Amino acid sequence: MFDLKELKLMFLDPTDLIINNINRFLSSNKTIKFIFS
Image (cartoon, rainbow, N blue to C red):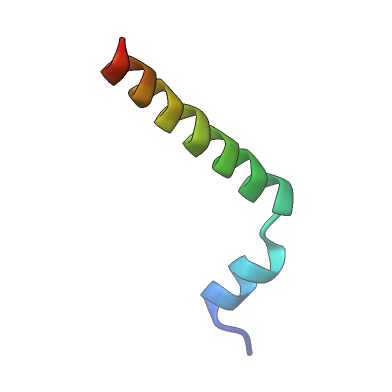
């Protein structure tokens, strides 16, 4: 039997991870722009 975390890792869509990374990058950019504006 698989652990729930293992199943999540196995079925996790790589595009979801990429989108999450892009969103994190964009939000960090927004805060940087806000700080320096």
